[in-house]
Each structure stands twice: as C-alpha cells, then as structure tokens.
Length: 143
Image 1 (cartoon, rainbow, N blue to C red):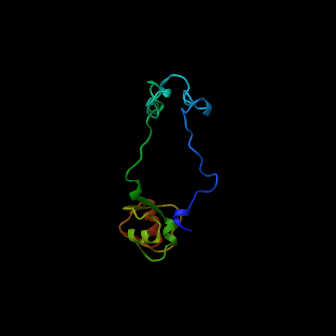
Image 2: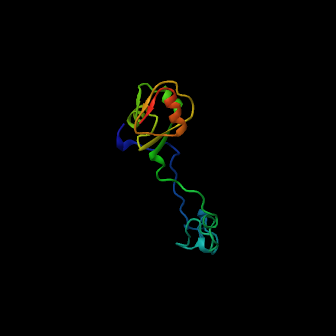
Image 3: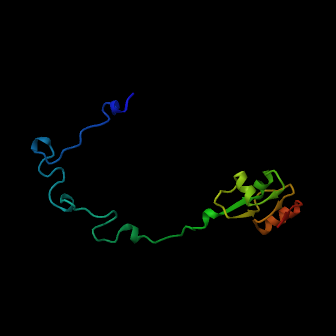
C-alpha cells in the first residue's frame, strides 16, 4: 500500500449539494432557504439560545447549587478499606500507592463505615470521632 493510492471506500464520499445553480437542480432560486425572513438572508442568524428577544430559557431558570473546586483534592477512606490494607503504618502516600485515593488528593479523612479488626497506626490523616474510637478499640493509634 502506498500513500498516493489510498482512497475512501466506495460510497463513503458523495458530491456536495450545489445550491443556487438553476431550476433543474431542484435547489435553484431561493436555494432551499424558503422566502424572506432572517434565516433566508446572508449572515442572518442569531446566537445559540436566542429566543427573539424573549428572556432565554437558560436565564429564566434559577441557578442552583455549586461545584466545589476543592473536591478533587479531598478524599474519604472507610474503616473496612483500611482493614484490607497490609502494613501497620498508614499515611497519605501509602493510600495513593495502593490506589484507594486519587493522585490529586491532598487531604484524606477516615470515616466510620464498616469494621476494623487489626491494629493500625494512622499518621497525617483526618479521622472522624467514631472512626478514631473504633481504631483505638482495635489497638491502633491516630497521630
């Protein structure tokens, strides 16, 4: 195969519609634009969402909620996820290495969801009160 011999598949390409080229073409005179009006004129169109001067839908509806810009940098880890990890020292780097939190995460909080049955030492992570109690009850520590 050579670059100068490559062609599209048969039937993949078809001739562009040539408007305004006489009555016999079927698209002569008004060239498929109909009669009069803004859309029939050259350059006569409007911006997306324009409703002829009526207040557009996207401006009539109320704004609702917000998206936190900090969201990709905060993460949560449950007690049951910690229970499955190997190793006793758990910090942000170990969680990233295992893939429990994203690489973008800057702060991680341990929440009380599930059970923890082994002794773990948590360093540099946020911990809820319930999770702290459960970790210490299992013989672990929170620093």
